Image (cartoon, rainbow, N blue to C red; front, side):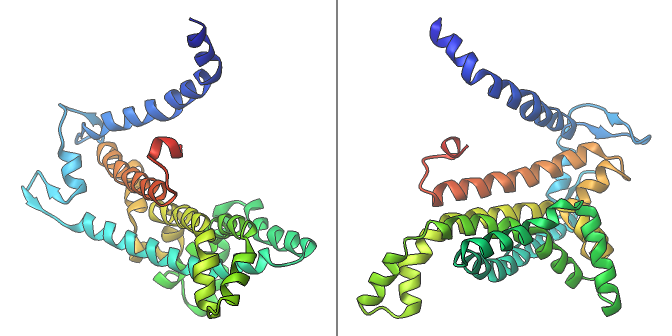
Length: 275
């Protein structure tokens, strides 16, 4: 009895919070994904897997495969992946540069990195229209990439910076004393120490980039519609909540896969220990 009381006193509030704000909404959304949209833009009818079939390209009405959604998913993966790659190329050296600065300058650079968060995200995206309009880049795929890199670069730099701060630079000196070239010494002594932050930064960049719809909608227009735009449209203009719910589970699946990969790379036994 005492153990049960301790459980509710310690883990009880957290479990209740997760149940009310995570498990219950996910269960409701799953229930919606098994319903159908009626002619009056209402939700009802018997339970069916029609929306799940549409997610993977099967049109139950015409009984044929329509790979449009898979193309949108593929485009979303490519754009999110390339945006993440740009953040790696720009953010990884930037994290080292900030970490190697004197304390006062380091604090100033971190402040510059965080200042954009003081402004509403939507306003910052609209500001890029004014910046790119003289170059006739809005709407375009290039504008979408620029907007995504600008939006998600701080999410990549901060965890990498945290790992660089903990690097034991004596290992680099030892590798160089043993005759390793600068590149080999870095890859053998420094890079493994920053790997946890690198993986965390990739997840914090790739997952939001995969599900975003604001950046691609404002800066890319209809030319670069992503799966996030498709989900937003189903819950908005189309009013097809079952289909939008099924698409949302596809995005959640991508998040879980990313967390599982992070758990493996971090040497954890499972996703439960990571959480």
